[in-house]
Length: 205
Image (cartoon, rainbow, N blue to C red; front, side, top):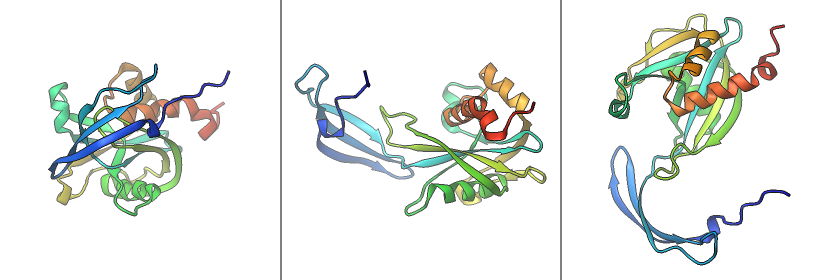
């Protein structure tokens, strides 16, 4: 029997959206109700929502050297749970108005790592924190030439101080297994690579 979800966006009634804060980020307060699985309607619910906008994240890989390009940068929110708030991550960035996600991948690769993408492959879209944030993140895998990759990159206007690393595939996969990565986009992209590696690159045999 085919699985079908019975409820959808039309089963939600938004009573009001009240702006709470608009600065580097935007917060709105939602008052809403929705249909229930067993019938009827919920009571009115009030939620404060982080309106972040949409973003991309891209995992660069050099098939000739079998190295991933990962970046290291300071993440203030990581300080609550980690003694190491300089995180190893994939390249990522916000999608601006009228900007195609593919173009954002190429722009961010240049800005954050000084690399040019030679081939780009879509992985998936997902919601990092749908209980509190409207952001949708689109993941990509990219082939690159890592010959001259390295150093510190980023835009001074965005207070970016990004250290670029070339790390061999075997070491990165070991770190993934050990739980060293704590950024969701990085974990998901690397897991996708591990599952699909042979289809993407061909077998080493």
